[in-house]
Length: 456
Image 1: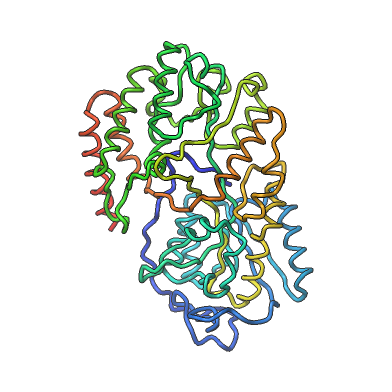
Image 2: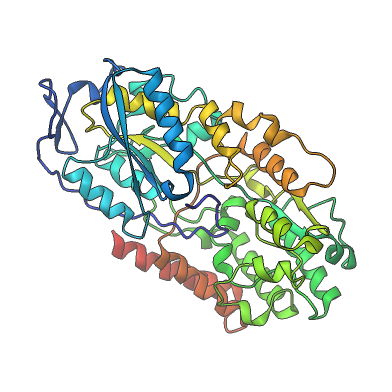
């Protein structure tokens, strides 16, 4: 289960050509005179008009790698739903969520066997929406968005084949992002821990102060820019891709070159370990050893420090990740969708909304085995997220993220691993002094465009 946003998201949009399967929906009712993605479906599942019909029948619910750790919780949700809706039955299956997740679900959709209610990530939702396999929730239930943070609901859309943005998903659980830092190391550098910077370049300036103070005894952060691209660009409101996603445009913004120049300067001045430039390691381990001033930005990491390094936790504080020019954070939630091919769509829609309502989301967020954040306004206002006492930095991290999520959006730049690596490699060359920042940015955009053109 992935609950947090990696700085420099590794998630890529998978461009898929989905052919119409043209198959019949097994077990469909007699009113199947419409199609969804080439499958015969009940006409009420597609087109305009609110979904109607009895909430009775059997459905299949698919999660992504949740059954092992949260079997008791979800079995309880299912039992509660079935009790509230006599005549319904929910069969729960769990997908491992590996690298072939999207392809596997697309194949199921083409075979007209997609589960009725599906836990999806962004790239899979993109593919299935484009091919017409998901229920248009905004049309089939005009009130579907009411429980959710308005900005989150507004941005949780995917495009159909015509390019129209549809609400084919309900935003479910998400992660968050905070600054985690060692107050002692910041104070040594003359940085006030109570006043975190509000811009990315302001944070970089603090990194530079740490480098000058530490003189190689410890560092500010890790060097590999893969953790920061495109997350930093998103936060700075630098457009990485064109609106159609077919070309790179980040070199058109002069702040991109400034960003690369900063990274090169920080690396040269010793703000980052030299051997971390191409390392896949994030700051988690060196932070707990007191070797870097800033830890992982995932709020669950604060709990990890609390449990595994009490001495460092006593010196740890959390602050707001710089909002910079964007003015708010972005989230990368998991989603819940309903298959347009469902033969019991009223049951599937009712269960999807039951699973993602405030009560269910709040209950799961309170599970001691997980650090996740809900997407409903009521849940984020729960005392569990809002009450902070004493020096409980983990509780403070929860409150910070909960407050962020009240204005967050789901708009994040998704780069394929190939495109991301092409950009990162050019930044690394600039950090090593092998290219100027300007040349690295120019070359990065050219290489990214080559790959995007190949992908179509």
